[in-house]
Length: 243
Image 1 (cartoon, rainbow, N blue to C red):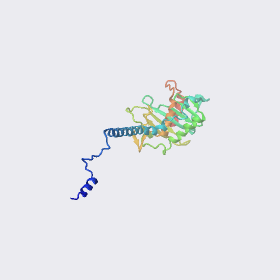
Image 2 (image 1 turned 180 degrees about the vertical axis):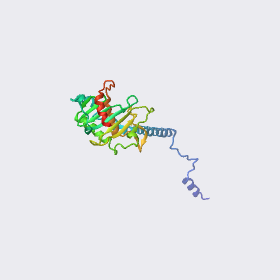
Image 3 (image 1 turned 120 degrees about the vertical axis):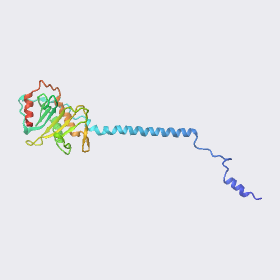
Image 4 (image 1 turned 30 degrees about the vertical axis):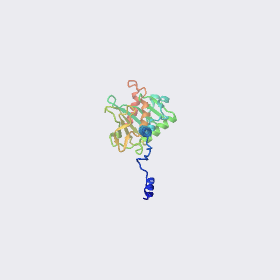
């Protein structure tokens, strides 16, 4: 009997029971793959967390940057006219009031060209050209609806998200020209640097940067405020320009 075919078949197709294959997945390799997968997952999760935290930091960095005009109130010099200074509507740049239950018509600051500031105590000051230019430029931006949209609310106010409603209202009156009506824009509830709005204005969820920058700088006018010692005569002349 010819057995050549069966022998050829035998060697062509090995018997798996007689010639078992050696597995490439040893227990040690399996453990290694599992550790690698775990390390990869941890790295991805860590990167995602870091990126999430980084994005809002980038978004707010411009508003948290220090303005070169910061500290202008300390650097300002006393105006030679003192309390004899006569505020003029034609020279007015802005008036900032702080409205509270205690002082419904409170006063923070007014600016008059070419370089005059009157602070919350009624002191008449002269600013450096650099500080004046920075404040004036922000005032121009804050009255531009393209940069600070109108809110549609009373006196064009932006409402900050706060737990309380009895917080100060910082109300700007901005001059667009020498004789026309003053342009109002206000911020309700700015007491701790918070800029998130209680209700978005369109797609805007935070206080516009230009308005925020102007508010931070002009609030320096309240430094050393003394309600009992302020010069009410000068302040009254300023507030009369709102009538």
